[in-house]
Image 1 (tube, rainbow, N blue to C red):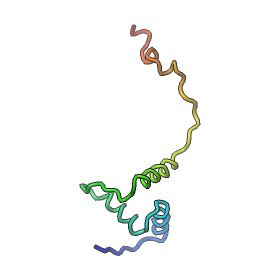
Image 2 (cartoon, one colour; image 1 turned 45 degrees about the horizontal axis):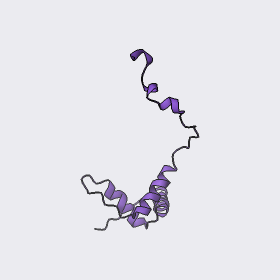
Image 3 (tube, rainbow, N blue to C red; image 1 turned 180 degrees about the vertical axis):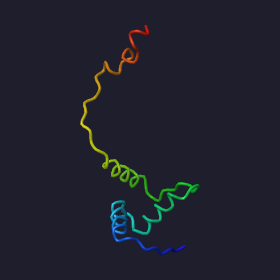
Image 4 (cartoon, one colour; image 1 turned 120 degrees about the horizontal axis):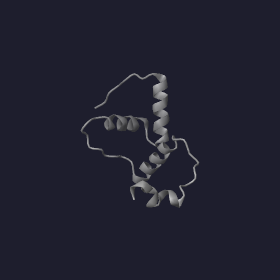
Length: 87
C-alpha cells in the first residue's frame, strides 16, 4: 500500500537526517517508525545485530556523561546494608 502525505519541511529534513544516521533509505525508515507504533504488531527488526548495536550506541550518546568515581568497597559490603540498631 502506498500513502502520500504532506510534511512540513523541517519534519521532512529531520526524518531524512535520522534515516541517514540509521543507514536506511527514507522510505524504509518511515515505514519502520510507523510499524513500531501499530499496537499488536509483532516486533520484527529489519536491522542486523550490528545495526541494532550501532543504533543503541548512537541513542546512548544523547545522555549526559557523568564522571563519577566508583563506590568504595565498604559502601557495598553486607554490613553497609544493615543498620547497627537492627543487630
